[in-house]
Length: 78
Image: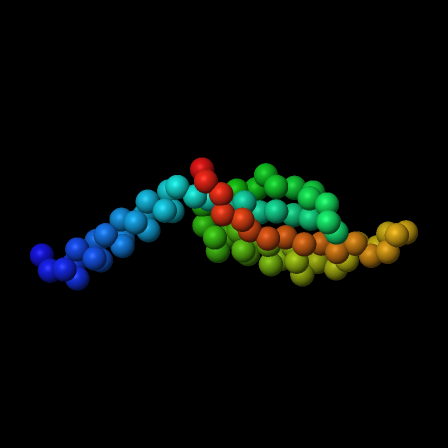
């Protein structure tokens, strides 16, 4: 086995371990208030998909002025 093979195996095992140790939490906010933070995803791309869709929503009209919808993904330990 060459050093390159050992490195590739090590990197692969580290990535596999990291993906089983963390997940991604979708944080959903209206203005500065957190509305929901219960949605967890194993895959960052899936979490980002929903965050992007939520961020594209129009503002919510209210008497105090329009309220902005914000969403983002946060890595967390399992």
